[in-house]
Structures are given as C-alpha cells and as structure tokens.
Image (cartoon, rainbow, N blue to C red):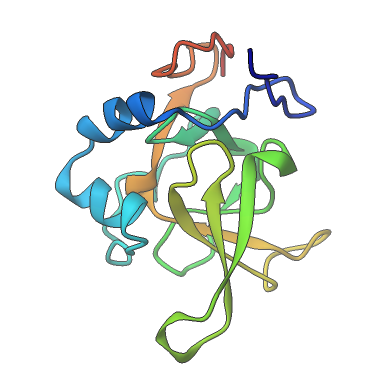
Length: 158
C-alpha cells in the first residue's frame, strides 16, 4: 500500500493513478484541456470567475484540490483572477517557465499537475505576490458547500 501524501492543511496530495487521471480528463471541455493539459492561457477579461466576489474556495477544475480562498482574491486589472496566496503552499507547485522568450514562474496543481497560471512578484503586501490564474482552470465553491471530490478522497468543505 502506498503512503498518502498530505498537506499541512490535511488534504491528500497523492497524484491520481493513470486510471483516475483518464477519468478526470474525460470530463474536461476542449478549452479546459487546452489550458489545464496543454499549458494554454484563456483570453484576458473573458474568464467566468474574474468577477466572482462571494465567500468560498477556488479549487482545481481537474482534481478538486482547494487552491485559493476568496479572501485572498484581489482586482489586479490584468484580466485574470488574481490571488495573494494559496490555501496551503503545498497545494500549488511552482515551475520555471521559459516559453515565449520570457522567464516566468508557472503555477500547477500540486496533486494533478494541471496548469493553473503564473505567479508574479508584483502583488500587494505583505508577500508581494500575484497568482494570476485562468478561470477555466478553477471551479468555485461557495462557503459551506462541499468541495468537489472527483477522486473520492473525502477532503472536506469550503
């Protein structure tokens, strides 16, 4: 039996096995596939979650892992939902991205490795970070509602 990898906040970060991954990917729309699996970017000011202001949690669209809380969301003026910090630092993986002749830090879901967006050092204090995330890479769960659990891991509520 494999040991379960847990974040400090108690979430199971064990990557999906090939069968689980196939099930998760089967439910993605073409646009979700382009962003999450092929590291694409949605057009600015078009994402459905850009104006989302309710209390709750933004989860990975692919595997349901909670990534950002609404209280960390801010208006950056960039055209994508922006956050100051993740729910748990272990939930968001940083990867050096040298595409398009730039050096950036790509953010990926730490559980399923899906592309979420990028993090930049131009956010508000105190950390000064701006997690710039594609709406299509997230699902929003209003506070008090059950989190998506497509892997059947029983990880909790928003």
